[in-house]
Length: 59
Length: 236
Image (cartoon, rainbow over all chains, first blue to last red; front, side):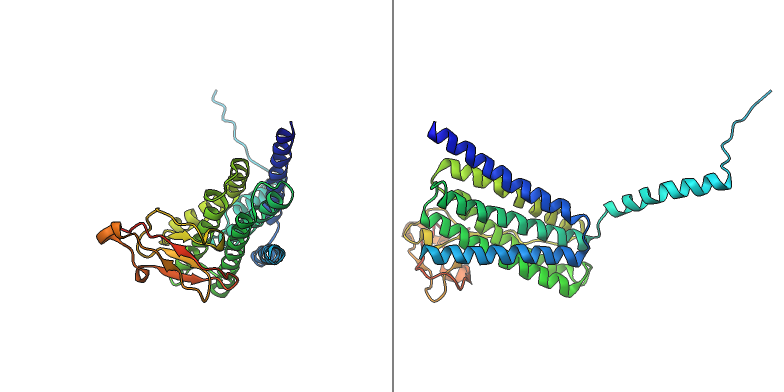
């Protein structure tokens, strides 16, 4: 049961992340090219910063 | 007696028709993005997908304990590389401002860099994950990236842009002690740590098809600091 519950939680986690991606794609429609590029910059900068922070914590 | 019915809109009707149709036509026209806009959007989609994969891998490690330290480290390194390559691609897009005959060769090469990084990330995030549940969930998250990649590939094809096939043999500190028997082709990109040249433990049985270090291209990742050992399985 514990494993099943964990898998359900994990599936929900993935679904939540995909929903977030879908929401971001919807937002694109109202943006011009430069705004789309700037939004992507924020995401990639965030990925790089969080990735480096996690790597640092791993030692 | 022959009766012909004709619709003759009055001036007011004509104005009304134009007023009603104009927004629709503008909307329809807006459905077809320029190639430049499509490229911007695809890059943003890739950024979203890479972010989702990175976040998920952190959760799989810290909350669910389904992947180990080496596995999450490999994915983080791959995500950082992919995000950096994607950002570089956008900076170059900003510089050229359009996709045309003069810029398409350059753009093809830049897209190739992004695709290579994504391929490396996917290899780190799926092929090498031991836990089946974690691997399948990461594979789902990778699908968002694949959609964006397909958009870019379609865009390139429509513009006659030749994209180099991603040639990646992902090597990361996580797998530094492991070897592989998978062959890789000449010209394969090996993502390797700085300062520590990859060690080729070449299998003599590969004979004439053996790949030598001269056949591959090394891309240095400044944040990596582990010795990489690669067993070359031979090339073609």
